Image (cartoon, rainbow, N blue to C red; front, side, top):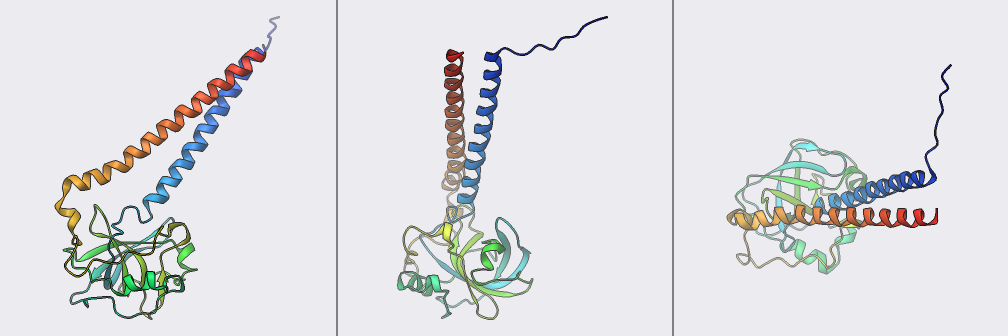
Length: 239
């Protein structure tokens, strides 16, 4: 008759395994938190030229409502007015520091007939002026920013639906540190398509964000591993 025995790992081995598991859990938690913060920054105003506002108007198509952001395409109308038409503004944007640049924003004059528009998800827009999904063919007006490296992208600070209802897009977690910028005088400053004529600048803009992300991930990983090693060493000395 063969007897089988089950050996119990030495105490030091158990401590080492527990420490490694703890370090792995901490690494995963920290990296997930870092990734979430990076994604939120990416989908805010960081990818847009916030030095200048533009007014657009047109019809909506390719609507995709959902989390973490909603998207649609606006086919820009011809013959836009020189500045933003007079509209009601949401309560959070009625101070002169915000309303003046919105009302004076020049119309979009870039080369794109269609702009890819990013707005907040339904969980926010339902509280800030829009409690439904936009319809294909619906007309909207908006004031916002053009993408830094992708000049066919648009991020509103406010937009108006068919019935004139204003929808605030400067939400709690995305409030600018300063009031909305006063736009350049007509004909002054960079054009709406400035990014297209500078491939190197666009490449720098696109590459700088991933570099910063991976540098941060590497630093966090090293810190967690080093902390786990110190923990294990301290525990082994007490055994």
